[in-house]
Length: 291
Image (cartoon, rainbow, N blue to C red; front, side, top):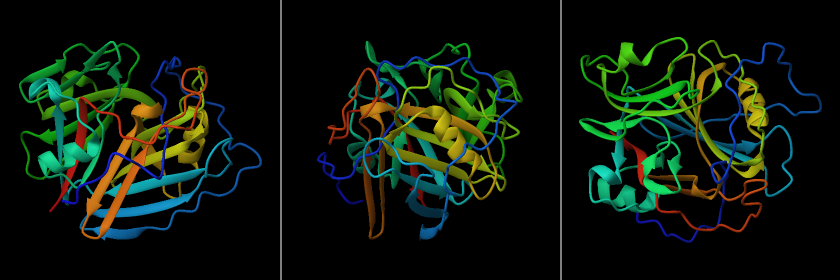
């Protein structure tokens, strides 16, 4: 594992610092926004079960390079895990330190955390017998499930739309869960966010083959813009989950000669600056090991 530096030259975005979230409702009248370019996705294989792309967003952001950083992960060919500081040494760590400590190839935010209780997730978060946050958060209708308990054929990580599959029906099937906010439902229908602040963000979704798609942007976009970008994806996406936004947003990858470090910054109204250049210490992360 290559050691990363906390000083980051390239930045990427997500909205958590003081963001107010929208009512979870489907945009039944969705149409592709006018004056948008096509989303061009060209994959590069960087490891077994891992493909990478960095491309221009379909519209220009008001700040930065307007790039989208995208991974396509085959959950059947890699190993996922969830880590919580509250279940270990109660010490938050930057993603590169989590990677070095736990021998991980890819690390990113395991959902949003409470800035007033910085070890505690805002949505349900559990890892095995340890409950970081035991309560389901009302209106947060997607669940990232990791480490299946009862089937060697099951995928190691699945994002569920809890309006299509209830939490009670899956709670005894996986060891780890991280709750988040929907951006696309189980049929690929877009959500309509009323509180639509522009920010850096990291989101995850599934394609039709069950691959996990990770999308990270530093240049600020509104959530409804990111939803529109996902609707323009060359293969249809569904079960999209908003993982984090603002300066806390972090994405780290080190696979062979490939090394990537991306950190968020901007949130309109609450952190309206593109100056963050370091990974923030995170209490909860999702990690991937390439087999």
